[in-house]
Image (cartoon, rainbow, N blue to C red; front, side, top):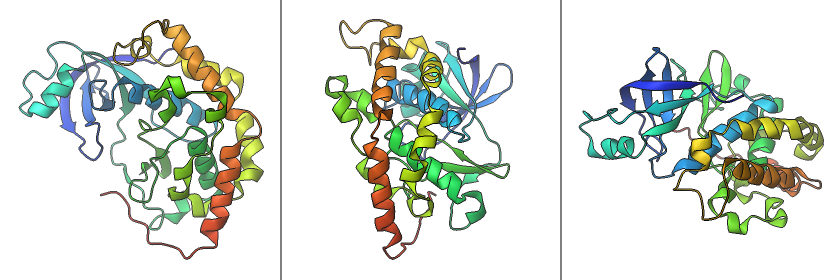
Length: 278
């Protein structure tokens, strides 16, 4: 099933905390979305990562905001005074990715709200971020939001960093650990990652992978900014993601073993003060 589609109506406000300059946008049906723009500095592949990682997160039981395609027509944002924003919008005509706007949500500080991040949640999230090669969940930038009494995952544009250079994607490289997992905001709160590894990996079945890659909009997969010559169409790109992630999940999963080793090291070290994103 493809993502729902909405036409953008009103650019409400930029969100300047991240480098990709997302914004809150109202669609023509009145719904509100945090839109990640294909014309921003990280390009269409960051949007692919947003969709694919969110789909896989839900499969392992982690909450993420609803996703949708948000389309910008040629007139959208013409009255924007900020030249940086205007340039991003101009380069983002057509398909972009929206995440449901969570009104009243705020950045999570696990020190201040420890009950929202129990050991099961922390273990699942650390394993998951290691699996999808997400380096962007540090104490300075947790990319976790508290909303309606739950902790939600946001901002996955930096994950799946392998897809920025497909010439280097091999089964061996796909099985490599994620070194930055040592900086994960919840590493010290997680449980035994090797013990949880098999159960979590079993949740990402071949059918889950099929459904996840099917949700990536075709327009992003064949965008001229990401499509190399003779790389095939959208189905060929979906197959590349499917093969790469299948290799990532093959046993033995070095990323889980390495994360557990780093967890034990962190557990034996003096705790450091956590800083949440402003």
